[in-house]
Length: 452
Image (tube, rainbow, N blue to C red):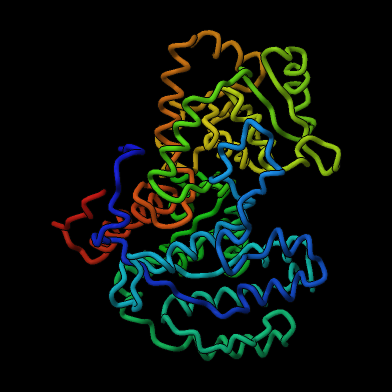
């Protein structure tokens, strides 16, 4: 059941039942130092890809980068990107009232590893990583050891890329012989989770390589660990421990009061466009873009590309203005089935239009019943036909449903008194893990946390 957006959650109460979380820090070689090594001569990639130590590191978008109609949104908009999701969740867990400082007390264990820099290095084949399976195997054997034992004996100065691979393997061989912890044994790691600011395929591919298997992912040592990525297109029945989490986007309210003010802005916003398209041209999009441009009174197209003279280059506030001025936002597939634009549209009160349900199929936790506030249409004409048939009453019903889900896709600046994306994630984990632990231990009459 979806919580009402103006109903306080348990986030600020002492009730952390089922979601007491331990932050398992990993050596910096897996995080910031790895970025320093991989991208120190590439400032643009470093700034965009590498995890930041502090969440919300940028100031709010400067007012001189706002179109006049978006100035009321100034307090909520940050210059954040999908790669900030690790920093945001790290910050929230580190400062959460539900954080504990021993694994024995914890219901959940968050493993602080930033996979995005390593994934970029892999796909770009920096330092020959792509062809060196031994490095990947050593890295993931070490990560598995850390989760199993809670111990990080390798010094942070270890350079897994430049050192001799055989030496790394010797290190790993020694530490992986340490005994498992009793905490891991409660459910073989079902209470451990990781976050990735790239696509879920990174987890899948690296574990595939680490397992040395030719078939699909079946690395049994990792079977119970939970993996979350901003791209969640894996089908849950086939990949039960892979799950999508919302792209961070730009909208970050600070409290329930802050969110309610944002909600009022969305409700009162005048939306002159029936539909908008904010995207780069691609072969599979051009027909729909051309149809949009044929009906300027109905549809607005904003072109986005790397060119500095394109409208998108003015800044995020201009892009979001188009969505805030639209009733429906066309969000076709990008490099993967889900685009950040899908979540940006929701955050601006714009009903997404997608070609099929793969755009939201991996986000069941954060987007329950997504078809109730998403239109599925492969073409511009099909979308307009559905919009015309629903009429004003149908639109208002769908818009009301959309507003109910908005808080679930936003990342608040801190633990707040409403269920934002992080709180929804932690509660979902609390429910799943409590059930899995009870079943693993053979407990028949178990009690789930009250919020389940």
